[in-house]
Figure: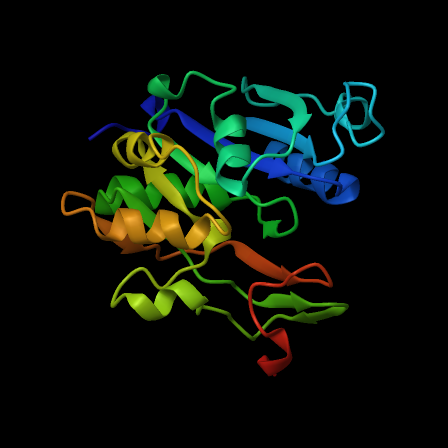
Length: 228
């Protein structure tokens, strides 16, 4: 298996109409303790041209890449969630990467997030992995001792009880996901179902999280009123 320095890691983010979240997301990835390239697809359902007010490229162009990595940004019309995410990833030549990280624009990824994903992969050799939330933000409250694990899609499986914003996978898994033409509705559960039902895909829950989920007014995938 490859060592740390030989691994190439690509993070990908799709973002629509959330400029502050997007800027914070990019800064978090550039604050990582190891190098990670970052593909970002800014999209809008109201797309007309690159002059749209929902094109935030010039709002983030002062954020320089660190650790000899690259940031590539594109702006275009919104498609499905799946297609938006794949548009972000495919800004790069995905065939040249070893690990792929789905990064949401509205959550917390601590400084050693990427480092520990890589370390876990090198130790455990999975194809698809994730983690739970290490504490979470609930609106304006920081609940540092309350960890979240369960998502709706988790109930279908005995394994893979980890959160979609922490999805990480290998080139083998990325080839499978990238070959999906389209997904109607939420992409996360379909990605998880597809990979967990693939016989040659090894799945694992990572030992370190370094991730905290942010429950805000635009979240609508879970009945958060049930969370104490």
